[in-house]
Length: 67
Image 1 (cartoon, rainbow, N blue to C red):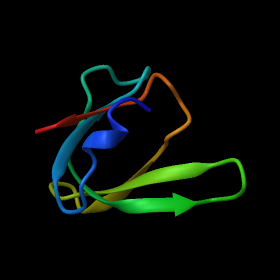
Image 2 (cartoon, rainbow, N blue to C red):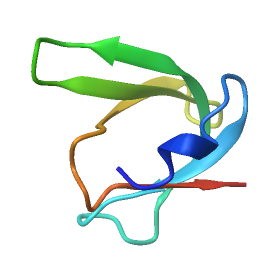
Image 3 (spheres, rainbow, N blue to C red):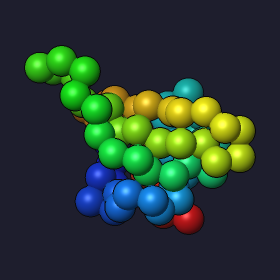
């Protein structure tokens, strides 16, 4: 994932993926979740839609952009 150094808890971001190049918006970073030895997820709360979103930080096509 590109832009990990930008992540600050409580700040809003847009996350783009290879499947959604326009990006997922209104995402507030809430932290990281270690799913297992090989997978760490960046966790976000979608403040507009009211649900959580998770993105695998090992996927190089995922990118975080600060709003």
